[in-house]
Amino acid sequence: MSKRQKWLIIILCEAIAIALMTVVCQLLTGHVFGPVPLLAVVFIIYGIGRLWTRSPSGGSAEN
Image 1 (cartoon, one colour):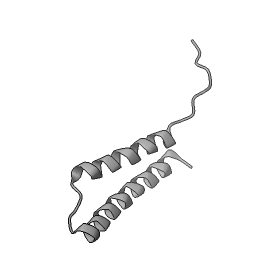
Image 2: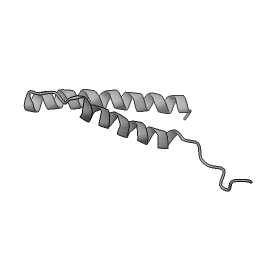
Image 3: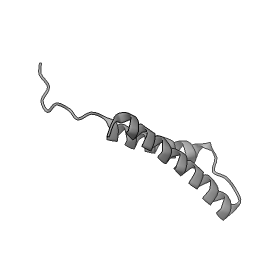
Image 4: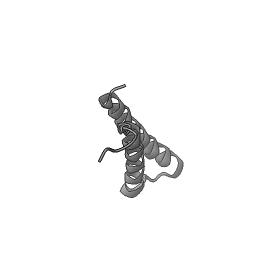
């Protein structure tokens, strides 16, 4: 799978997570999350995506 496909999956996951957080919280409590919890979820998913898309190291570094 190419990096472009992986990042597309990550962006879709972020959009779904934000939509679910907004809709579920509004249905349960009548209020919507503020920007801080939403940004926290975006950064957590982004961090996981960075780990997922980074290229494997070559083993040992040559000096």
